[in-house]
Length: 171
Image 1 (cartoon, rainbow, N blue to C red):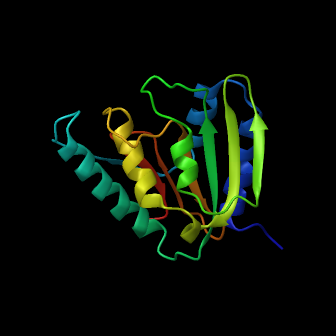
Image 2 (tube, rainbow, N blue to C red):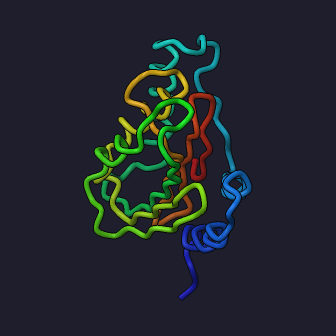
């Protein structure tokens, strides 16, 4: 049986997890996204209004990609030692995930990669996206990890590193 597009994408990015240089690893994964959306345009950096707009925009885009809450997804989490440069904790993210039965951990020098297979409904993605927007602004809750969402049944994917933009496959 031939691989579905998303299985090919996951298979394609899997070798990157062997890389030790986080900047090359992230850049390599980012090259697999076909669209970049700017977020927060025109709103002053460091303001609650910018976080509000960025959160709204990112949730709207996320929900255009992932419409079915029962969809199976792969959550790829890059986790760094605490404290991070913005004072964000690694613990907040895990309070937003309900299911941890299927997790693969890859230990690296200076960071770890956690890969979870779960359903979208088992993740509070709205809070996660807001915490990503908060991180560089100094607001709480903030996120200390880099996260990518990949569909397990289609070529859809979403990645948001900060309040400036998100990367997307599937719309």
